[in-house]
Image 1: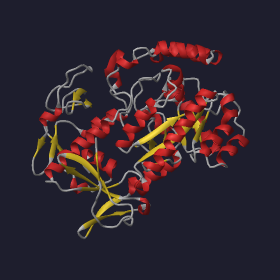
Image 2: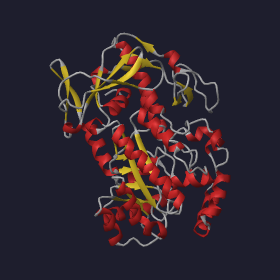
Image 3: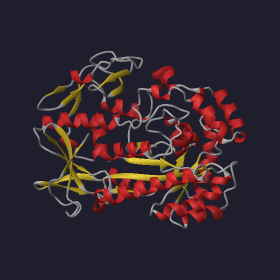
Image 4: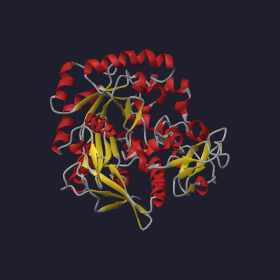
Length: 469
């Protein structure tokens, strides 16, 4: 299969023979930054010009060099390379000082985490604000949600549909039963006080009919008795692993990572955990597959306010080898309260709105450690009420992370096949899947989801199109 085709097939789950994506010319020797259209930043090699080795405006526009004929859309870059470079954050080194802060200095980081247990939040937040100063000047990825990967795919779909002369491309809708988007509630447990507050936090979650996952630190921070884990799972919540001991050193060296992952994988079996998240969202994508988990939730969509900057520039899950990456797509509660000093839903509303309009994943991190105060708890309750409202009004799906992982893996194995004059979905789980169509309407890309009353997997054509931003 053409690798450029594969990027779109993996995203849409559409028939391969409906996509004709080629590449024109010899790729440049070195990767760099360029535009695809006026507002989409890419990083990779290009055949039409030499990309910029640094991120600076203006950038060459690769869209001007795209060739479209009756047979194919030919790009001056490798779509697979560009998308994987963004998802794997391989562009960050080229951002230079724009992507660095104190956390990139190993010795400063070690000193901070040695002192951290002795520093109250009232002190830490001032140090962190100083360390993160200038974050709002970061132009890439785009704050507060970056959808570059989705926008690149959508731009190429528009080109393909023009080649196909207004025909449609059938695909498997992103979420089961035609849900419009997905939201995950996740709770990272950092301290003993946070651990002891989990029972109360589950009561709050349950009062809004929302289940969550609890990411537990296995060593040093607090004891993790079996009764504690059972108290979570028996109520229908999920237990995952968070790092090993939360000291910020998991990714210091490959040798250290190897040593620690041996213990982490043992805890995964002991806790019956299927998912992982690293402390403070430190990460190295190339090492993830040493972990024995089904999915990871450590890569931010936009990391301007994280110790390790970057961002995967997508709001959808994607595979890193055998592990499914579920990106963190919303601002953490600690960051909202103590770095941005914001006790409203305004930022979360803006992020969820942007994710909802592109049908992606809203992945929230709420710490039991930081919502024990009356003001913080009220903001959290307001958030749960808002998400529950979206479930009722906008068709939001709110699963556990493991349920999302199960669905996305099932969907990745389904296919859309021809059946007479129409199309149908085949594969395990098809009864939950819905057939949808990508088409052009007045030059704009529209996703056309079949009416929910139509039996799943049945041959047919779409109706009720949803314009893609």
